[in-house]
Image 1 (cartoon, rainbow, N blue to C red):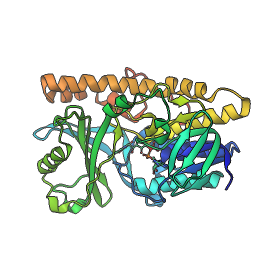
Image 2: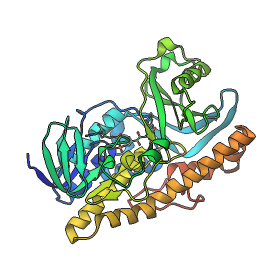
Image 3: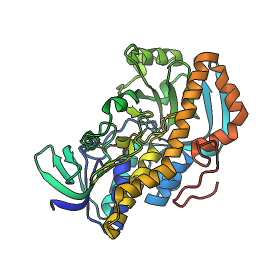
Image 4: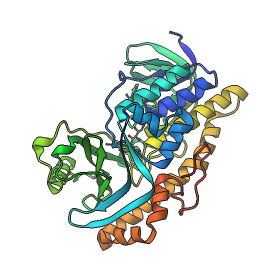
Length: 387
Ligand SMILES: Cc1cc2nc3c(=O)[nH]c(=O)nc-3n(C[C@H](O)[C@H](O)[C@H](O)COP(=O)(O)OP(=O)(O)OC[C@H]3O[C@@H](n4cnc5c(N)ncnc54)[C@H](O)[C@@H]3O)c2cc1C
């Protein structure tokens, strides 16, 4: 294997595949290192919004039909419910359905797209460290590689991000949510689940979900926690409230979720961060699939352009993030604190009044047709189809 590449991408999930595919299509040499062997399991609710479906098509050429034919699409629903343990707050219909996918299968398929486009994909290759100034990447097995650029797409515990001296690691930890998710057979869930349900009001800054996923139902909670939050206990109370018998549970797992920790300047030296590594997750609902693919694509484009014309990849990436992504994350962050505080002061009923006031535009905002920045019309800089 070569030891030098135009770009080394650390992490071969959504952000890494998007970055590697973008670069490989520009004829650039790119190596992707991931510590896992694909297909590997990935904890995720698997909910795709409109903008996720659009970017999957624009970048990877995947459509709901192709995902369905590959057995990756598990459920489609244009309805949603928002509840507390004691009351229904909102039940609604959206202008576009949510699509629910199997993340394990999706991730493997997208990485295969990058490989077919010409990226060198190395699985079971764990990155131990990175020098963002020289572009050197050290693997756990002692091998060293060098990239003209490095893209850190190695998730919430990013090793590449850890090499950035300016990143405030304590802030990152404080704004990272804990999550627990389990998959149970739909037969073992007390009621039939045809549409996503969100449960609010039992966590200070967070929520619970019940998502349909083919023959299974995915149940989870996520939230910021302080020293006194006992997350496993909260999850047991959540299962109790849903009426799920402990015997129905298979393995219960957790994974950190960036929840407001996104970086405004995710670059240092020759290295850029994309996806969860840069904290790019929408901080109200925790949507990260779209942001991982989109920031991965932007990082790939910025590097490809810099390699072509000698420009500044960090500046180009930052400009794109500030124009397209950060207005969404900032708007969502503002909204979540307003909603969480309003719930604390006035009770969860305030949410049902809020949703009744603007159900249509709010649904379009979640889907990405309107902006989290005061509900303005959102125009993405990749091809989208009207709905
Ligand atoms: C419980 C849960 C439910 C969620 N549900 C949804 C949802 O329904 N919809 C939605 O839009 N988002 C959801 N998200 C968020 C979404 O899953 C993430 O934002 C998304 O996976 C981020 O993609 P990524 O490519 O940045 O990172 P990841 O998908 O985390 O991938 C990182 C990759 O890097 C690899 N890696 C890590 N460290 C190293 C290393 N040192 N060396 C080499 N490789 C390494 C890993 O093996 C992995 O393949 C959920 C998250 C959680 C935790």
